[in-house]
Image (cartoon, rainbow, N blue to C red; front, side, top):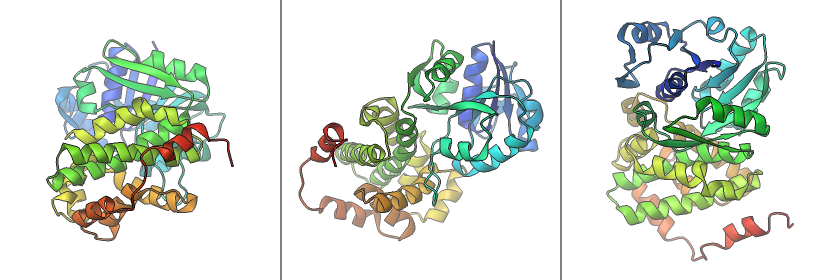
Length: 346
């Protein structure tokens, strides 16, 4: 049995805490919101995020960060990308022993274009953690909380830490694979949210399966193209954190990015969409960051650019689709072949 703190009591943080309780660990979940803590304790559930799922009786709920992390071996960071730095700054002040630090968030920071592990490295002292482990994959919190079969990837440059994370979470319904491609796993998890917005827009416009299949496939090409330039292994994207995460996020109404895109495709303004969602839509912020990054790296990402234009340039979703379909003729796999077979060439 390990002592583990889960920082972040949204749907995904709660679902991961439930997996850890199922595995008989000593689990504490932390929320910065005292009212949420009190409601979870009184009601025995996380009413806002997983309203129909009872919390394990063994789960300890905290709004005091110092108490939540006392004597823990591992910390699982599950907060929105925009809250990563603030949470790490708070953690830095109260963490006085070394832990295994696992993050299960998906996004890229605008302006800096940092991945989450890079943000963590910048905010915490290396005496406070051994290395960052990324936990990512096709995994709706709603289904994990119901103990439906789910597979994810634990990635770390330190293989022993990836294996530790695998042992921590793996059970009969939650299967964990390991990887050393931190860059690929993080970028796959972040960039798929952009494509999920596009899938929702397509559905909101009333297009069918043909359009969505094209969007997912060409979206995967964009993800692979950019991530490979940033140092990822392109083969990562035929796995759980590439194809797998794209399928689950682009085809399910559980996906908040798909839901947001669907509302945009129906003609709703961004401000109204975000108000209706009531939760963080990581794809919006990630679209900003990746559009900036693609320009800097001179990487062609027409789907991402089109979604950016819908969000920030008030471009009609129908016009974006028409423009994508009218692009110059090209071959399908030459660019990916270059990535796979000519990575070391000038």
